[in-house]
Length: 445
Ligand code: UGA
Image 1: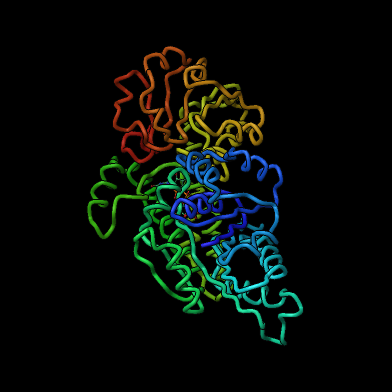
Image 2: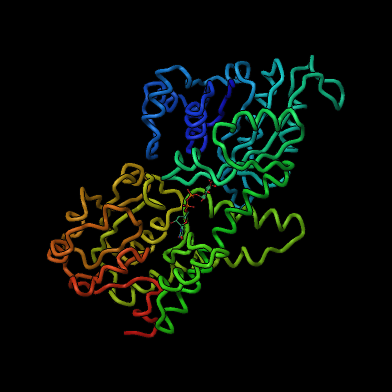
């Protein structure tokens, strides 16, 4: 099928490449000239495992191409996926101006039947707004009062891709959700996803949009639940890792998203929880549970900072080494990463920050100021009063801790992801603090 993808961010690019991989002819469009020029040369502007080889392969076989023209992509495609950003506004609402803008542009260039699919995460009722926007902006010859003489459909098809494993998530999804208004739209989307051989949930657009917001919010709730529990663990001397294991073996609960730490970040959970709270407010429901999920997430970072301050006492002129800046491993994305708040709070207290991340340093250099970026964890450790583990990259598991200990001024580790909890860091000669592991109680001195 001929498919157009509008927006080549994480979601659009992965979707475009993977749709080419399962047999479709795909054109990806973006208004960012530099990005499109890079992509045309086979350069992927993000770090996403497995993406670049596939992109190069399907560019070579001409199943995948890139363009700056929405007109071209609209006229050459039957199905158009909107995958542009929906950032948070100051009041927490999702900013849908890019979605609206793209819808208008698609409408203006339509010359035959099109199925317009929203892929970006959007609040319920956005599909209805897109439908109206398209009808209003069709070329004059296709407009007849409240009706359009040109047939088109709008559908919702939310993505459930995790950064860092997005290609794998696309190819082996737990489910595909499609929200449609017509049989024709359903059939087209079923055909697109047929090669994936997965369960397809068909519903209306509002329900599909809500499935996405509800899924992300529920996962965020699991994280805040375990983080709240980790605080009790610190007070009563219990081990949050064993608790997560004990709870997670119950199939009704499941072990995933029960890793306590410095909380969730990234371009999705914080934004989507905010947008879902706003959507609820507007619909007349006060979603206190989600407000609490958000509060616990913020508090978790404060608690971590308090722990550091408690143990280092005066932060001014202390040298703190940060292992990991990305909001999670296997990505170079630092949007809403806990490292942003944690580093800026420590700098405010006068601490000197050194940092290392396997992939995110290029992006971090544009965002962080007065941070000494180091070439590896050993250069990072040199002269540090403590280390903070903020992202659980695999390569941090097998470090030479004897060497690190000898390089540091004081061998203290604050582990924001409980990554070394099973590694007996005390035996290796470190003063070690995790979150909810039952041995650094809040009252300890
Ligand atoms: C999330 C969802 O998992 C995807 O299904 C969804 O498609 C995507 O948002 C989106 O809406 O586009 P992502 O943000 O890439 O994916 O990453 P996650 O793996 O969900 O992690 C989110 C944050 O939660 C990270 O900061 C991670 O460190 C944190 N986390 C995750 C925890 O603190 N504890 C856990 O147990 C799991």
